[in-house]
Length: 192
Image 1 (tube, helix red, strand yellow):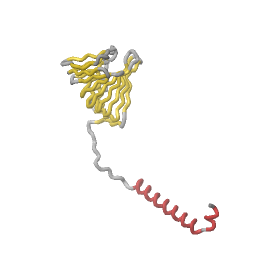
Image 2 (tube, rainbow, N blue to C red):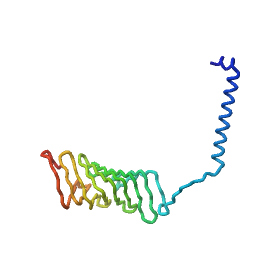
Image 3 (cartoon, rainbow, N blue to C red):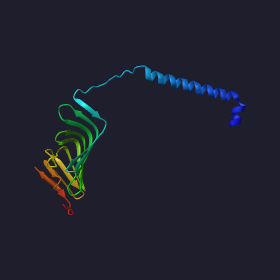
Image 4 (cartoon, rainbow, N blue to C red):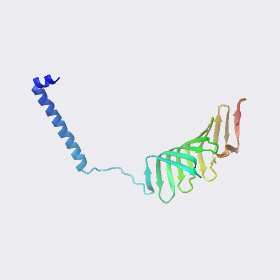
């Protein structure tokens, strides 16, 4: 290959000319980008937001023991309201007996002082083989309770139930369904 360049000096000159031209063009573009002020259009300023994050992860502990781990795709910290407005929320709640409960939702509002959380939009709670679905759910940190005042659907492979309200006492591994509770059960149904 070296002999080819030495025998054809025109090819070598053309190659050098192309590299020089390309380098000059790249240099010009970089110079324009760094010296000419860029105009930003369609900029929306949220006067209520103190900070917007492209992702958020928070771990809540009590007496050194992890109670929950929260992840959100975006978080907007609202001024003067002590709230973090969240999107695409995922929370893992930990029980006292080392079990976990997974909750996902489209939106959430975290109270930054009490660490209570409101979840809305496609709320799904999974624990072992049980799945609970609802439109709204609330988590109260101090008693470590999840509750809903809207219709809920609870199902597993052997049963499906619905109720007007629900409460999950995470530390007690207990769920309470109230108000027009109805369900379908297979003969293999068993509640642990």
